[in-house]
Amino acid sequence: MTEIEKIEYTKPFIDKMAQGINPLTDAPAPENDLINNVRISRCFFYVSDLLRQVIENGGVAKAPKKRASKPFTLTPEQIAAYRASSNSLSLSQFAKDVTALAGDENMQKLTYYDFMDWLVSRGLINETIGPDGKPQRLPSEDGTKIGIRTEHRQTPYGDRDFVVYDANAQQFLLDNVFAVIEMKNREE
Image 1 (tube, rainbow, N blue to C red):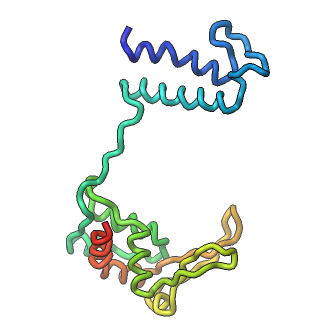
Image 2 (cartoon, one colour):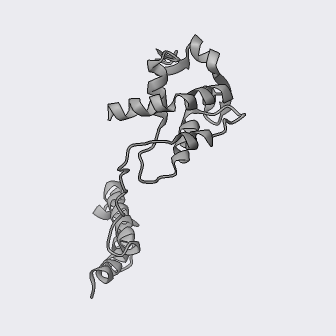
Image 3 (cartoon, one colour):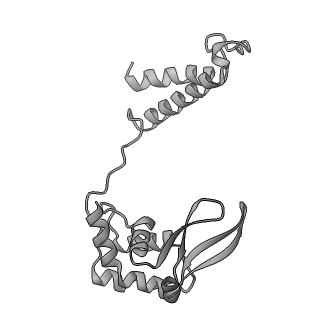
């Protein structure tokens, strides 16, 4: 019997114990039985999922994520290919769109935080404490001049203010993307 076959044979036992069933008799375990303890049951469900992954991946739990090895870069041609959206975007969406311009999976990504750190350092975003006592980042007066603003939106979790970037702000960030990349690479 191969190791995978042993795991395939073992998994149904773990599944039954996770469900509070005696795997030898197929009878429900008594209420006070150890396998009916919620923490033990969760452990069995966790182990069952790991075994499923090992079976599906031919003996490996999860393929390790490849870590991006190259620093993020863009060419002037790639930047020229970007078209600012007529809709206001979140900074996260803008960062994803700019990262997609590179088209290289082995390259580190530009993130919301990379752009936000640069905007804060330039005084275009102010870091403050909100009425709820939590930190918040809002456009400064200079930030609003380039097209960074807040939008009030209704969400399933209640009304909320979002910071968004109009086409002018997107273009401003794109014009300064090399400064953002340089700051990111210096920090790393």
